[in-house]
Image (cartoon, rainbow, N blue to C red):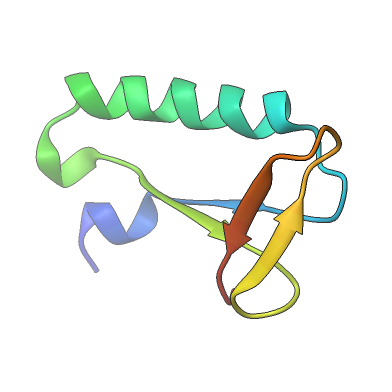
Length: 68
């Protein structure tokens, strides 16, 4: 198992999720990825209860989640 496989970040999307909560997490880990070596970067994924479900956030932003 390589280091990259241990660095999966799965963000759970659910109806009426607060968009800022999702964006803040993505921003922090995407920023970390800019300074980390390629083999230590986080793999950011969006997951939802239903495969390929479109989720509407609290303020109407639509997000796409994949299977977990």
